[in-house]
Length: 339
Ligand code: FES
Ligand SMILES: [Fe+2]
Image (cartoon, rainbow, N blue to C red; front, side, top):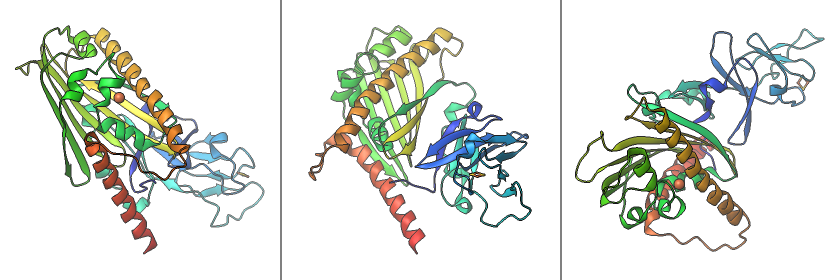
């Protein structure tokens, strides 16, 4: 189940260069490159002649020459040359996808090009905001993209999965609340006067109790940002505490494979490279703990032949709300197509 009229991250800006790069998004193959003027392009990666992968061909100027029999397409997907013939049949063309670059990432609109609306790119301003420093990466995950958004919307798992870094018992002991705002879900947990989790203690040399905030924002189809703060209890002292955004965009490759784009972007100790490295390495290790759980969960889901439903718990409320929003959007989209 995918929302087509949506922006998906296809890569970091620096990954799309003057060469042909293949990406799969929601089960569709794309060939991507930059024009000589520097604009990122995404075309369907199936040659209209015999369906060879265009990404195996050559980038010539701003055109792609298929590596099999030399059919050449421009950056709008129109055919400009067929070796050995003058006439170009009208159907010799590929789909061109709208592309936008924002918040360090290259986004591709997978639906109706007429409906492409840049205001629907999720608000990830802290990836590029002055006074904030981001570090991040991309992880290939053998799991459905919604398992990743579920994971990010219910942080009670930190207590059990991430006890080495960002989890401790204070997380699970503090209830969270959620609310739906239009297409978004906001989940909030504010932990008062509790021991810091190990990573917070290391980053800021904290040994006293802290107040900890987790303010989560889900934007469909699979974007989650988490405003994470930890201050000495009873203060909002950033000199001794920390604040970062965990920014996450999950791109479905297909139903059982995802690309997990992530950053941590902080507003303290910006010059301190050792802190950048500590945060980067610790968060990557933390996410790999999630990946291990989610990939095993994916296998269990796929191999379960029973029709018995899963049993929900109170902490699912945010992820269930997000799934409902996405299901509704997908339903509306397919109803509009069949009209
Ligand atoms: S398959 Fe591309 S030119 Fe023949
Ligand atoms: Fe996690």
